[in-house]
Image (cartoon, rainbow, N blue to C red):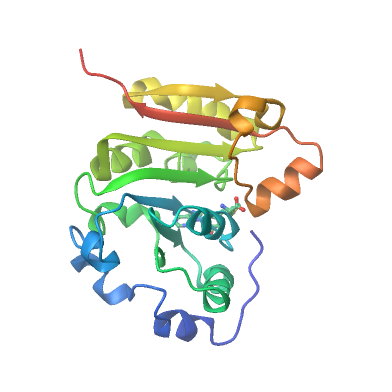
Length: 218
Ligand code: SAM
C-alpha cells in the first residue's frame, strides 16, 4: 500500500477514542471482554488497511466484537474517520506491528483471525515477515481459542502457495482451500469484500482463500 504522509495523523490516532492507546497495549491481555463490556466472541483482522472489510463485518454482526490491527497511522486514519461517521460499539482499532500480538492478547482470547491481501514480502530472507508464515502461525496459535480458525484471502498466487506449504510444518490443517473464490458459489455466500479484493477481482485476478484450524495432535 502506497503511503502518503498525512500531517497530524499520528496525533489524531493517538487521541482517538476508537484506537486503544499504544502505551497501554501491554496491559491489555485478558481485558478485552471487559473493554467491550460483554462476553461476545472477539475476531481480529491483521493488516486491515483502510478498514472496509472490518467495518462491514461489525455492521452486519452486532453480537461479535471486532478489532482491526494496522501498522501505519496514515492508513488506519481512514478506518477511524469511518468510525467517526458511523460509530459501532463492537469495533475498535489498534495501531501496532502484528509481530507483538502475543503481548496484547491473552491465551485463547481470540475467536477468529482474518488476513486479507497481506503484504507478500517476495524476498526469501523476508519470509518470516509474511503474515501467514509459520512464525506468525505460531503467534496465532497462542491467542486463538481451541476451536478458533484463520481465514486468509489474496490474489497473490506465490504468497498463497507459500501459505499453504506452511500449514503442515506449522501444525495446521485446512477446512477448505480455493484458488478461485469468486467462482465458488458456496464459498461466496456471505463473502465480505475488502478494498484490495474489489480492486484485484475487478481486474480479473482470481482470489485465493483458505480457512484453517489447528491439526489435531496424534
Ligand atoms: N486488508 C486490506 C485489504 O484487503 O484491502 C489491506 C491490504 S494491504 C496490501 C496490507 C496492509 O497490511 C497494509 O495496510 C499494511 O500496512 C498492513 N500490514 C502489513 N504488515 C503488518 C504488520 N506486521 N502488522 C500490522 N499491519 C501490517
